[in-house]
Length: 299
Image: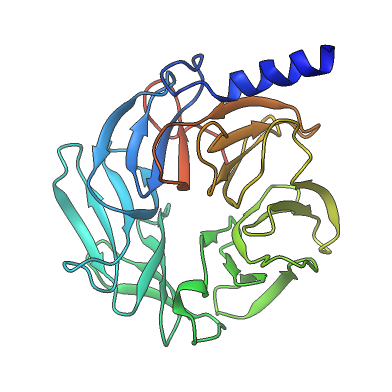
């Protein structure tokens, strides 16, 4: 009887609409819906485009990776103001663009998928400052790579199909970690490297997140079934908080299941977000009370 009551209570909690949820985290949502969501779960800003990656810049503008459209047949990275004016753009030259990160050197990091998959650093004048070919299959462009990130040592961490690779500044692969064996399609989506040299990796369709050490040994993992009452359904984006908590996007989840979930390393759920839309959260960026990027978060 007690178990039944607890199960009903937990299901009811998850079924809360965004408006009913207690104050939580504010974030930039990227995907089929591009919007800023406040801590009460209310959308406070929207952009009419499908996006793949992005961030809020120090000047308050937004850097967004756009899926391909008639205006951008190869995809794009754009900087937009809060009144939706495009003030900078890079038009993709191949099939699609993934990744959008403003680097400390002022360049924009992105990846292009196509017959010649590559990682680029693009200057604000539109010139290509860095170009690194990515070793990918060329049959299925969409599956070539996902969220690339630049590391403090100047290297690049790139999820590529079922392998995460670290490229040095010359484009040489200096580290890689293949996805664990799985009956599911365990392609990597996001990879984050902390100061201890550990790498957090999301394996999308496998509904699996792993943390590996510098030698590639799994030291922590999250699987479907680990979170009572929460169905893990396509883990995509990740955020690693200074306190060790992890936020992951549950891409294929729909209400009442949560689309974003924050957990401790002990796998205790401390915050969730869901809404009534049919769109999944492809990527996200956590924000502070002032609407700026939350300090100290790896994403």
